Amino acid sequence: MDKASEVKEWIREISVKRGELGGHAICPYAFSASVKIVERALNKLTLKAEFVKFIEIENYEVAIFIVEDDVTLPMMLQTMSELSMMFSDYVFLDDHKDDPTFINGIQSNFGKHNLIIVQKRDKLLKAREQLAETNYYGFWTKEMYERIVNGKLTSGQE
Image 1 (tube, rainbow, N blue to C red):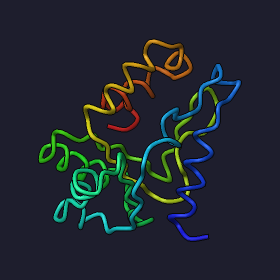
Image 2 (spheres, rainbow, N blue to C red):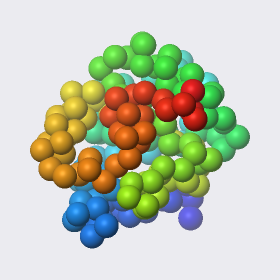
Image 3 (cartoon, rainbow, N blue to C red):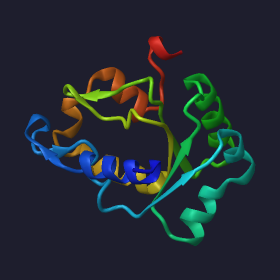
């Protein structure tokens, strides 16, 4: 199976409603979102900003970039910081294969390859507001919530 197909399978897995999460999926909106999956060198993301084309012109809701397997988490975070400064209308989420994340004991990250996930900020914030009206975030650790929702790294990742 190629990397893009593996990511598509992961999207299906994180879209399944789970009893351990009070009937929520790991990512409740993942399966219904239109997603563009592309393999790209990390250093090309900043220069090309293809996600703007995918989201603004081709109308995808999410762009997922599979970057090199040997990219370190600090390298990814640096690139995401640069992109965030240049493109404030977007949210950039890291998914590093060597930095597993869990929601109530269930692995939530992909874990096979390094991903950068890009979404329009306003759409993501609206979805987060809807989820906040449920018990969804009650299954998250404080550290996970701070990192993902508030964009703050915990002491182990700074």
